[in-house]
Amino acid sequence: MATVMAGSSKGSVAGYSNYLTQEEKTDISLIETKDCTIDFARDFEITKNIQNKTDDVQLHEIIQSFSPGEVSSEQAHEIGKEMLKNPKFENFQVALVTHTSSDSASAISTWPPTKN
Image 1 (cartoon, rainbow, N blue to C red):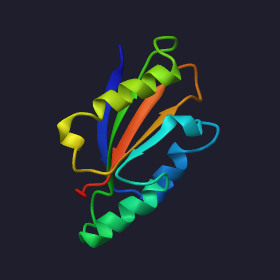
Image 2 (cartoon, rainbow, N blue to C red; image 1 turned 45 degrees about the vertical axis):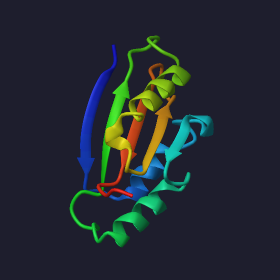
Image 3 (cartoon, rainbow, N blue to C red; image 1 turned 90 degrees about the vertical axis):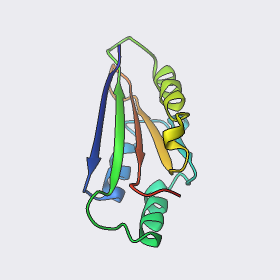
Image 4 (cartoon, helix red, strand yellow; image 1 turned 180 degrees about the vertical axis):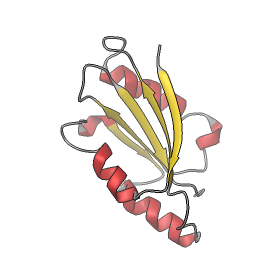
């Protein structure tokens, strides 16, 4: 059974993006975006600047972590994609990155605190 954690960050969006997309943590096929490009940190920043939301919370995240052997990285990614079909994400830019760097998989969804 997956462990699901939700949170927010006041840290750098670019720094978090760099962490999420490290080659040793994921594969390009396990990075997807909605309403933004693969350079989602830049896109999130543009949206936040347009809407004057540059202080306080910089992004939100949901991490779905699976026990070793519970699901493959590809299955974890599909589960993350299913979650993002929820109407609550409809008006937000979202990046989904699935980590493969350990014997367990984690699907990480992140989005800025602003609507499109």
